[in-house]
Structures are given as C-alpha cells and as structure tokens.
Image 1 (tube, rainbow, N blue to C red):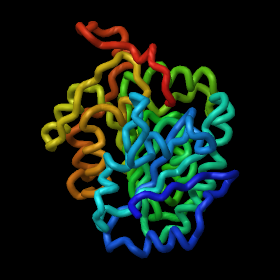
Image 2: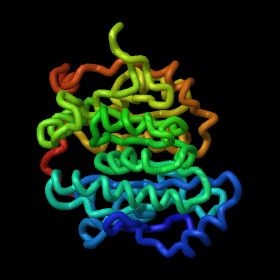
Image 3: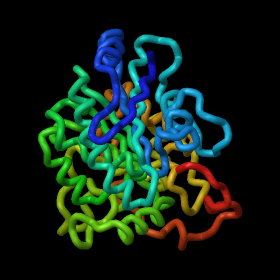
Length: 314
C-alpha cells in the first residue's frame, strides 16, 4: 500500500486508524512516510477538482498540463516495500482565496492530529496553500515528529513561518523553501489580497532564512531558501549531480514541481538526506535572492511564454 488517500473534514483527517496502523506496520525500518498537500482550487469532494485524480494520484488524469504525479515522482508505486508510504492529504481549497486561506488553519489541526497517529518522523511536501497548512501544523506537534518540510511556492507570510520555526517542532525540523521569481505575481497578489499577520510582512517568496545586509538577522539554522530560477542554484545542483531544467516562463506558480529534474532533488532530500545535508546546501547555493520582478524586467529570450490561455486546476 504505497499510497493512502486521506481527506480532511473540519479539523479531522478522515482515516480508519486500523488502516493507518496496518500500513505503517508493513513498512520496513527506515522507509519514509511522506505527506503531500495540494494548494488552492483543489477539493476531494468532486471528481473535476479532486487532487486524488490529479497531482496526488499515482496515475493522474491526462487532460491537464499540470497533472504530474507527485507520489510517483517521489519514488512511490514501484512495488517495493522499502519505498515507504505516501499520504495524499485532500482538503477543500475551493471558493475564494479568502475562504481557502481561512480554512487552512483547520486543516493544519487535522494534519497535526494525523502526524500524532504516526509512530515515526514524517516528511511533508506542500504547494501554495498546502505550504501554509504544513507550517501551521508545526506548532501543534511534538518535537521530532516532522523531519523535513519542502515548501513549493509557499502561499504564506514570513512572520508566520518564523513563529512556526520558533515552536518546539521547529527546533528539530529542516525546512526547504523552494522559491522562484516566476512566482512574484502570486506573492504580490497574496500580500495585496490577504491581511498579513504583521504590517508590512512579505510572502515567503522573498525568503526567510537568508540574512541580507549588515542589519539583517542571521540565517535560521534549520531553514534554507532555494531559488530555483537562479543560474547559480542550477549550477550548484548540477555540481551535486542533479540536472534541473531552466525556467521556461516569466510567470508560473507551478514550476517548483513541473520543472524538469526538481523532483529528483526533493526525492533525495527525503530518501537520502545524508546526500543533501542542509549545511552543505547552504554553502553551495546562493545566499542572496534576486530582486522581485527581475524575471519580468530582464532581457527577453526568443521564447519565454506566459502561463495564460490554458485553463486547468491549480
């Protein structure tokens, strides 16, 4: 059973405890448990919006250009016991951005309760509002229960992330914040449309763990920003043995998982963490983010399309 579909109702993850216990008992020692969380526009309550037929499926429907299987990309579904267990967490992220935003903390409580039922450290991968859900669960779980979190184009503010890292679980987790200037438009929309916890707060696309200037705070020891459209980042990943495609669009909210080669990095972060220790990555990767809008105002190559004209679930 490499994949468990779990849906959230209210603040509870709807799963038979015996089914979860059986799936965990079948895992060999050291096999990972990974919880994948989708973002805005998905809901498991209707087939046309279900993440379980889309990015959280082993065999997603073929009618959407963004429908790639996260579980398969992370090494699940190959018929080997050591591949571990992937939990696909579905929640109602439909409606307006304000409705989905307000619903996310309830989903964080459900996620925390689910993590409490699992008798080993878990890894979490979350995109967009799914990243908000993942960070919201950190202050609600025990120290050591979450090993690594991978945030993909996170729809969350820096102050909230800082508070999560200051929690007991935040002192043991390692967080990899995947950013790109391709996501700048979505970061600005978040800052303009949603009330930030702190006045003047910025979205996580601006980074959190990197000091900027003499007056900036020191980098958080267990947080790393990885800007995947920076040439120096791609060069460093290449040096480590990962061939990652360059950016193809000026604006894209989904490149953190659609970009060729990125899931090889995420898989290594989860399955072979000794290969990619956070300290090594901090030494090799650029520590300064490029300025916001630099992808829009920079020189235009011959072909760099905008992601418009294609209607699909986000």
